[in-house]
Length: 438
Image 1: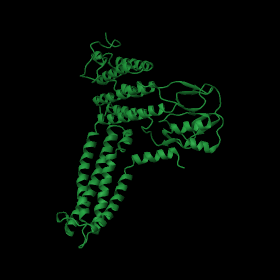
Image 2: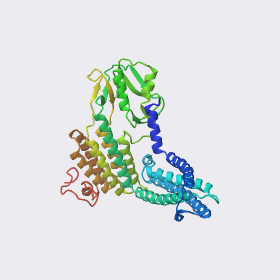
Image 3: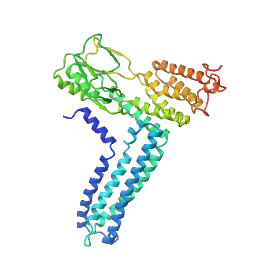
Image 4: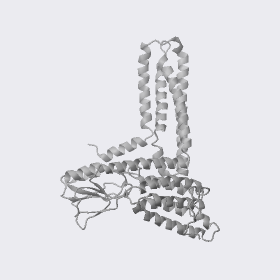
């Protein structure tokens, strides 16, 4: 029986593959070419929809050439997009980009049209012309051109950093909402740290290979814990890279039956890969947005406005997370919880530190970035849950220290120390920040 991890990796491969759907399109085109030939032999079309054998051969040859040329051009555009995206944004963004279905559907249509038209071309003789098929091939060419224009428009617009940040933020919203919905329906899944109080686990499950934890089957693990009447403690977090033979789970309670079979079952509920994914890992999406801002603030690019635009979407993501209850409870083996699944989670402090630290460091000399960061942090201080505000206050204190260190002897100290939702040029509160100016 296929494990959950294997099923997850297959789904990930299919979502990211650029050849599976085009291959299916080519096979379908070849099959439909044969079907159309059979249909054309059994129907009679009006004279306005019939072709001579020489005309049909010319039209189908032109369509085959156009399909091949368009396919090559689409691949060329794709390579250029990859080069620009990795050089301007973040290599991590590519994992999201090549999942886009429009590129795959366009390639599938082009290769399917090529196979369909070539199949018809082979069947044209002096006594038989697939009239219906020639008309369909022409319609497919028009549809391919329209879809190509949509593809070009889509990717030209997606080459803007703000469009990438918007796309990534959308992933965070969907994944975070799904994680919260799953948590609401799994009462025996607990988030927080675990304290064993010196008690040894009945079973320790280790990884069989190295890799980044891409996702876990929380429902399956919880069901396994209920069935064996034990507490399954996950010792890692989604997104962590683990070496081979590293501890994945500690099982507390009666020793599970099955021995190696149970270990393999538990190992099969953890998907390992070469890199992180946005599934079950909102921090990875934040990492992508921070990478884009960091690259914009590098000396080679020096584009603080792009970093400010990224902060717009980063603020939205952090507000979503900060308004949620992130458990930081501690579960003890001798406490009331003796059956279920314990998952360590990232704290709010870790999320906000991930989103702010590097941008503050690399943008320390930019008044625009300092002002936008302050505006974001002050908005978060107002909107996040009360227990999360102390972490925001800590980041504001660090921002004060950065501004004082960088602009301490600058005539722009007063400007660098005030919040501005646009960085420079937006509305600024009438009162200056008390920590920096009088």
